[in-house]
Length: 100
Image (cartoon, rainbow, N blue to C red; front, side):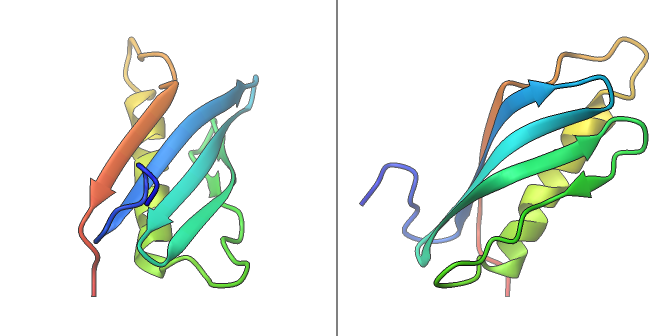
């Protein structure tokens, strides 16, 4: 079993790939007992819109895990709206129990 593969619940790993004038790109890896999914997500800096890839393949990523990734990306964007914002995080790794 790989280190990032949980035996229950799910893990989201966000790794910053690029910060551009109007957007930030993160590599998103989703890990669950059923499998691992990977793709790039984009955050539009102006309005916080988030574009996630289709985490398909042989099996779809659990919808609750995709929602969790979206929520983490939204939180990253929200933190940047402060008066003296922090840098875009280089890497985030979070685990949560399965929903449903």
